[in-house]
Image (tube, rainbow, N blue to C red; front, side, top):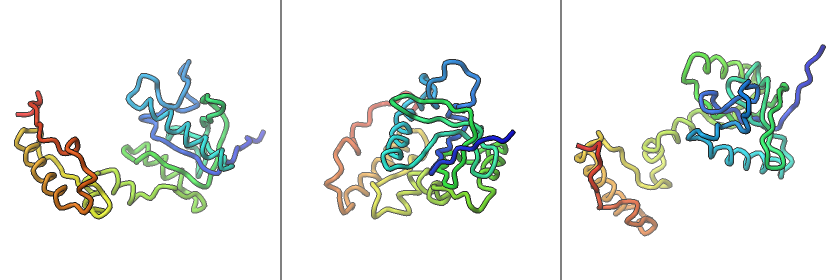
Length: 197
């Protein structure tokens, strides 16, 4: 008996720590991100992504790191059709992976290595750019000409916030597009915060 494989132009693969596999035994799972989770809005984001792919005649599906079974292969996937998320307990494949998971554990590192174990399978994401853009301070430091001014708050203290605010105000004042920033971004209204000392 042979397993039929559905080939996609792109597979979105999200970390199993945040998204639910289409192969999940959980009853009543209507979408990849749990309705009560902090990431529930991602259902809208990825539904839009899959619809946009279809509009451009690209076949796309959504899976999780828990679904990975080989190079470019997943054992199950989600589709989005007519306003509804659909689970497919079938093998899917793509040579182009939009990977939204970082190897934070040994298990996920092994899955990631397996996913990209063929030179034919390429990541849509660049690991260097992922790392750079994940940390907003690093993004600003590297791309300061193109980024909004950013500072790191050193310690959750009133002094740390005040110093960061002062530095941010100075950066905004010399920014070539300083008129793009309102007082809402750099508010002088530092109200007391419970956790600040």
